Image (cartoon, rainbow, N blue to C red; front, side, top):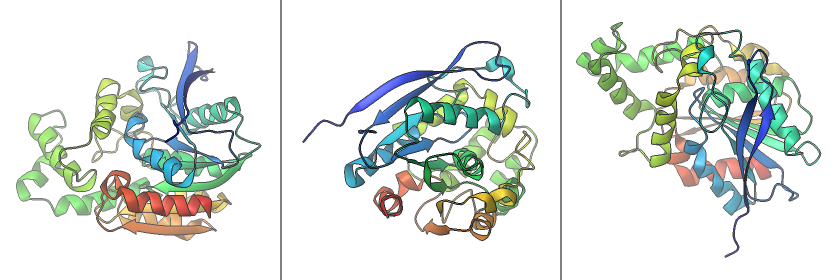
Length: 303
C-alpha cells in the first residue's frame, strides 16, 4: 500500500484589527496537485478545531479526494485572540472568510477548483462563503448546520421538552456554571450531539479545544449549545441562500440538535440542492454512520 502524502504548514494571516501577526495552521491529506478537486473541511464551534473531522480522510481512500484540514483562528494550532473575548466587531463571518480565501490562495486551489464541507458552525461559514461566489468553488456540503438560529432554538426547545423532568428543569435554569447544569448538558449532548459512548478521542478533542479557548464560541454562540446569547443569535442564513449557485448537499441526523425545522430552509432556498438525513445519527453522522456518510459525500463530490 502506498503512503498517503500528508503536508502540514502555516500561512500568515493579517486579521483586521487583530493587533498582532496571525497565522492559520493547516494539514493536507492526499495530493492536492491531482486532477480531483480538493475538499476543504470547515470545523464547527466556532473553536472546535479540525481533529473531530478526521473520518473525512476516508474520502481520499475511497474516492481519491484530497482533504484540507485547518484550525480556524482562535483555536488549536492557529493564532489565538483571547484578548478579543466579547468583541463582536472582530469575530465575524468576514474574518473567517478572509482566512479561508487566504488558505485557498496559499495552496493555489482556484485553477483546479475545490469543494467545501462545513460541519455545524462550519456549514454556516461555508454557506455564506458560497453566496460570495468565490473563484474555483465547485460544490458545497452543509453538514448539520442551521439555516436559521432562531429556528435552531425552537428545535432545541422541543428536544429539551422530551428530556426527563429533572434534566429539563436544570437546563431551563440560568445557573450555567453549576455541576448539575454541566451534567444535564452532557446528557443532552449524548442524545443529540454524539451518541457514541465512549466518545472517540478525536471528538473529545473538539470539546477540549473549546474548553481551552472558548473566546470565539462565547462571543458568537454563547455559554452552551442550548443557550444562544452571542452575535449569531438572530442569524437567518436562508435569506441569502438563493445566492448559492453551486450544487449543494445538505445533511443532518434523525436525532440531531440541528432538527429538520432549522435545516429545511436551506432546502427551500438553495437553487441546486439535495437533502439527506441519516436515520441512526445525531450531530456527528461522520462518526455515527461513517460508511454511509462517506458514500453519500463521495458520490456527491465525484458526481
